[in-house]
Amino acid sequence: MSHPSIHGIVAYPVTPFHPEHGGVDLAALAQLIDRLITAGVHAIAPLGSTGESAYLNDTEWDAAAEAAINAVGRRVPVIVGISDLTTQNAVRRARFAERAGADAVMVLPVSYWKLGEAEITQHYARIAQAVGIPIMLYNNPATSGIDLAPELIVRLVRGIDNITMVKESTGDIQRMHQLMRLSGGAIPFFNGSNPLALAAFAAGATGWCTAAPNLIPQWNLQLYEAVCRGDLDAARRVFYRQFPLLQFILKGGLPTTIKAGLRLQGFEAGEPRHPLLPLGEMAQGELAHMLQDLA
Image (cartoon, rainbow, N blue to C red; front, side, top):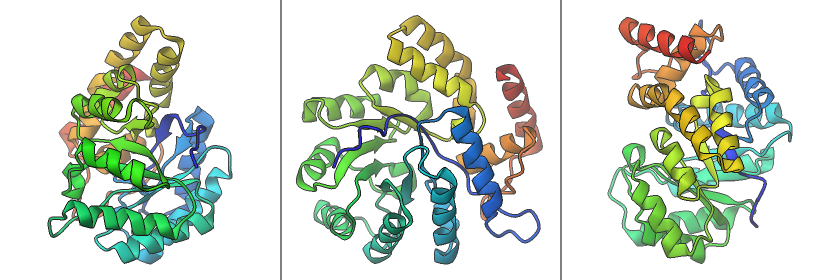
């Protein structure tokens, strides 16, 4: 069930909200996805943390998932983000994504009560049993409240057929090295921490899952292309040019900073949804300077 076509720069679009009534702006979402694909990204991953999935009701989520998949139109693979407190609704969303035409789903377990390994395993197993498409296991304790140890990740991948990829977002490069060591390099892993992009590729990452292509796709793609050529000097130069912006958007909050950056570039994606607040005036000035430097 592996999908070797999923690789490289996996772009995470924001979910645009209408500036007047605050609902999901499906037309703007389609335009943003077309812009990303035209720029050359290798896959699209809607409804992740960048897409404010946690702030959408089920009706909005369904509409955004379907609109995103339709907008991609099979031009590149689509990996739909799945995260919910309940296994029941995570299963519902995964099934919806599969029926709508997703190539894979990215599953992030979310916790209110602390989950044990048996509960995490059951969560993934039930989602896997409900769909026939690959699952990207997503580890992001900063947003989910759950930290999946490398040993557990390897057991999940080996024990559940649908899990064929891992996105690691702890920001700890040693986690990636451990995944490679424990799996003998057999598990495709994707970097989810922007400041670690260069180090992750050096560690053997299959791709980079990132919101940065919303703003600077050419720089993200140049890094991947340099890595593929084996040109480490070029990879370093390209990475360190974009590094300040990669740090900025991560520290400032991805939906907040990306939407502000898109507005500065003339693309209106609305405001982030409350309780998130728009980027402050001083930070907007800093962001504008960085974008101008990379233009």
